[in-house]
Every structure is written in structure tokens, then in C-alpha cells.
Length: 465
Image (cartoon, rainbow, N blue to C red; front, top):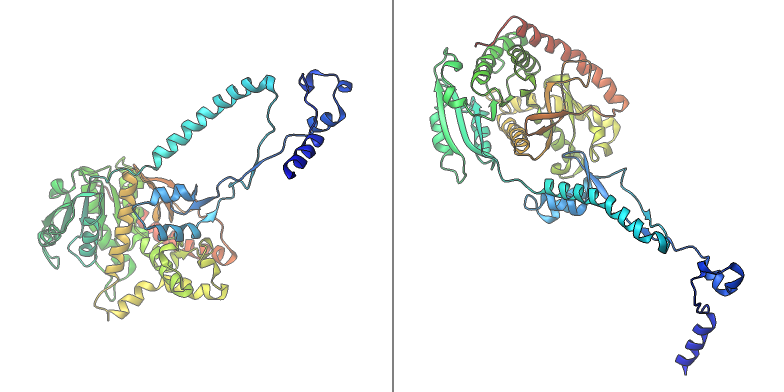
């Protein structure tokens, strides 16, 4: 009974069946009931586009599935989910897209062909992007640690020997090092890693260019934790002169035996040594962007200190540190990190000072018997890992001190991208708040003087042929 009633209702409200399409009839031939329905516009559908968020690693926007696919195998699912929550939503991410009404029958075939032609390049672009996301096999790179038997050099060598991109690791140091380089190499050669390790030693007073051909030939990355620590009564200029000569000996050997290698400098004062060595490289006709100051420890400290204050995991904090690598030239940009930006403004100056003076804090804690060797090795390895990943085709972003044009100074620390040739992009410093703008001017004033010291050294020196 109820089914019969429903059928009658449907019949009553349905438009009459026409033998011809309404568009083929004159308006007065179309029943009013059918005209009412036929003139109603096609419904608009709202298609929700998947949300995209910006990965701080490379500044690009991805969907969650794309991000998860990229980091799969590197991190656990929960860690990826937590990381996704720290990424900012892309401004370009579309909230919704209206579907167009169905085209008329006459133009359907033409529209479909046109749409297919337009879709093909997009499909190709998507396939290309997907291919780029595929993880590349681990690289087989040769790495040398000059000063590898020292306080920073030993733990740095340990960490680099564990990097899957390292096939061959060379440990170089002088015969006055705390242990022979061959001993460090023998120790590391027992690890369950693919890297082969070999030590090289040189007597004090000799020239690296005369002894390091085998050690440096074929190197892709040279890390230089070398030089003398600052002693009581020694001025900054005294320290620079001593360490600049040490750095020059290694750099001229690299210029001859591995000119395409990336050189990561951990030689104080970095603010002066890097400009000096880069300008000497330039005078030699080589790429000055291959000479890079490792300022990663400032970033590591800023992330850790922010994590401690906020109770958040520092692995998901990324505070850019710009300027230089000493005292007031170290400038953390807390406003550019999502977590750090939540800290009360009145706490920022003390936190800023904490990052600047962190090295002194370690020296005092060790009773003057040592410096920040372990944390520096960790930071150096993080830098080295980023460089090697870039060389293997996996773009990485870190802060580093290098030749730059983002400010009016010729050398500056800022975010850079590492790719298959080393530094492939130098990023602008971004937006700063009022406190940071004031700090930037303070940092630049000090940094300018230290850069000039390095430039003067380069003017009066040459790399050996």
C-alpha cells in the first residue's frame, strides 16, 4: 500500500517525458513544469583540496602524504605526525574549488579533448615531482677531518664515520696531537659501518701541500677543526694571525688536490678566517663559496635553550642564527620559529645573551681545562651530514657563514641550501621584529671590523701553486 502511494507521488511531481530535447523545442512548446526544472542551473560541487604545509627543511609546501612518504624510513610515524603539527599551513593552500557545470552535449567531446591536453603536462609534472621525492641511494663520498686527532676532531670523526653517505674517511693531524691519527683511524675502523678509515700524520713546521696529496685527492668534504685555542694574554689579532696561517696551509693543499670539495671551517676566529680563506680561493680562480664557516653550534644551542624554556622537543624547533660566530655577532632570530615566538618578549634579551655566552659557560664548567668540544663536534657533524645529503641530491637547509649579499656586508651567516654542488642558494634574513632590527645593527658593526681583518690578510698573502 505504502509503495503504491509513493509511486503516485513521484509520478505527480515528475516532469512529463518529452520526445525531443527541451533545447530543440520552442519555449511555448515546453510544459511549464519541465521548463522550471530545465532552467535550474547545475549544482556547484565544492572539492576540498588537501591541506599543504611548509617543511622548514626546504621551505616548500607539501601535503601530509607527501611529507610522510619523503621521511618514511628516516623517522617513525609518530615523529612525522608531530613534525607535521609544527609545520605552518601554506598560504597558497586552497580552501576549496568549485566544479564547473556540465558542458552542453555539443561541446562535450571538444572540451574533454582540450581538458585531456591540458592535463597531460600537469600529469607529467606530478610524475616528475614524485620521481624527485624518491629517496636516492646513499652516496659514496670521501671526507677528510683535518685536526681529526684533537678534542673536537676525534668525536667529529666518530660521527662522520657513522654517516651512511661516507665511504672513505681520512684523519689528518700533526705529530704533536694528543694521539696519533693512525690510532684514531684504527679505532674507528672497527665500527659496523661501511666507511674505510685511514690516518695521516705530518710533523710540525712542514707544509700540508707537500704531504697531503693522497689524503685529500678525491675528497668531497673537508672539515677543519684546527688551530690553537685562545690563551691568557693573547689578543684576538694574535689568535687570528696564528690560526690564519694554519688554515692557509690546509686550504692551499685543498686548492691543489681537491678544488671542488666543500671546506667546513671550525678555526677561530671564524668571522675573520673564513673571509681570508675565501678571498685567497677567489684570487686563485676558485669558488669562494666552497669556503664555509660552521656556525651550526649557535643554532643547536638556541634550539636547545628554547626547548628547555618551553618544555618542547628541540628536535622540532628551528631558530635561525644570523650574523657571525662570536659574541654580539651571534644573533638568534627567535621570532622566526613557531615555538620560540611564544616566549615572553621580556625574556628574549637574556635568552639571546645565553646563546652568545654559551661557549664561555662550558669553559668555566670545565674549570678552564677544556672548551665546548663535544657539542662542537655534534654541530660539525650535523653540518657535514647536510652537505653530504645535498651532494647526494637531497636538498638540505642549514645556517652557515659564507660570502653573501643579503646585507651590506660581504660575509654573513644566514640560512643556505646545500645541493649537488655545495651551496646552491643563500636565503634572505626574513622579517625581524623591533628588538631584532636593533640587534642586527649591533651585530653588523662588530662583524664588519672582523671581516676587514680577514680581507687585509688575503690582500697580503697568496696560496702556493
